[in-house]
Length: 142
Image 1 (cartoon, rainbow, N blue to C red):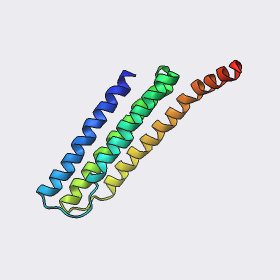
Image 2 (image 1 turned 90 degrees about the vertical axis):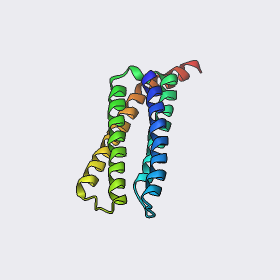
Image 3 (image 1 turned 30 degrees about the vertical axis):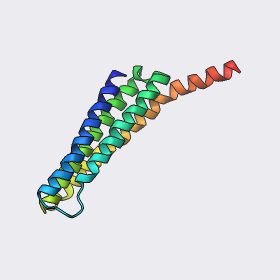
Image 4 (image 1 turned 45 degrees about the vertical axis):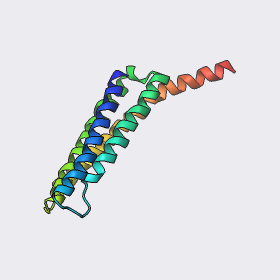
């Protein structure tokens, strides 16, 4: 639970800092077009902070953090989010500089999204046993 809490704090700080960076960097360079830098803020806050808080609530309710699949979720999901956010920053900086990103950036971003998907699958797998146990307990009480 502690790791989830600190991950939520970290993603909140990174999300807020990335929003300020986007605003100030594009203003300082007088950039007026669309850029991937604006997406970093929302990705970190939604996929980072909100997801970690939701999973923290699930962990408090169902006790997920003891399973091996939960550890796989936490590691894989966070790695995927860091890769995805890093690629968004890289692509956004290239856009502001007026350079083409090329296929390598898209490939690395795809890898980040694949890791996020694997992490979500591990989370769903780790939910299976506690949810079934909770349902069985509810049926027994009736």
